[in-house]
Length: 382
Image (tube, rainbow, N blue to C red; front, side, top):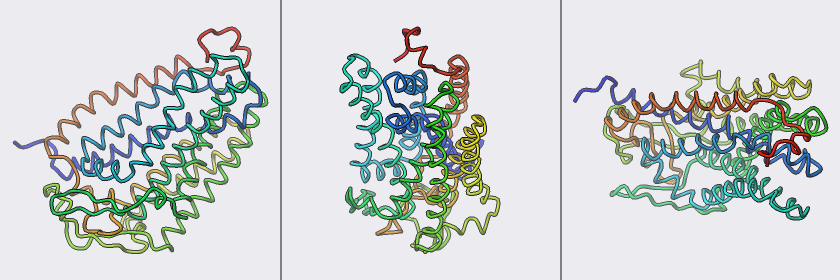
């Protein structure tokens, strides 16, 4: 049966949609993670901490939809990627999920007892629930860029030869810290919009300034690692974009600095890293000057630019193998079938706009600053 869109086009569309979902998660749940990571530092007493929690309290659950959608998209559109990444990064994924579990428990249990030690413990649990996922997500992206130690046997079974502590190298730690800085900047910008004018907002501006400067420096250091540190993979020989999904047909090899070759072939791609640097700089200026809209726009653009830089640098690679480059997973060899991608696209075209409209409506209804005074008058607050 002939479909309106050919196989290579659908593969590229789903590669792009996966990026959209990851960026959507970072833009929405990202500021939740950033606010949680800032909680023990921007708020000094119980009232201030409750106010900080309630700046994200009404929306954090809905924002996690993007995380679920991203995982579902990987499972359905890129089954080989799902199998290799979720099995190879099993302990890292467990650490992320365990950290994320602390968030709903912390939000619900924190105010159940007035004991200061009880509440302080849950505050630090919320900090872990924000900081740990931000760090691990960045470390995971760093590992993808430097290559995953896996190989595929003749039956397409993935054999992962790495360990948990092997995930942490100088480059991957730079990526992890960049992720933390990026999301802390985003969380700081959100607090300047949602928290009442006062000490919490002022502290958020201070930490946001530090995070923005760190993001700029770490993004530059990451570029230096890629350009001069021997990172990158390239295709050797032609790959049929319309061919069947068979990861064993990848003709790939390690090639130092190859992650920058797409920018030479397609100069328009430089928009992504420029947005990363310019967005962080705008966020820095915005938080320092107390310009909430500029700060949040800058942190959002930085997030968009940094994540897009990774995807555009690697295309058409999705998961390169460091021990057997010919087992690398590409856009052209690791997708679901032509029919599956088409049906999923139709479903996405129906439901993604609904998610976007609902999300916009929720933020519109729940818009406005949170103050310490609201805590004693609004029974719905945490």
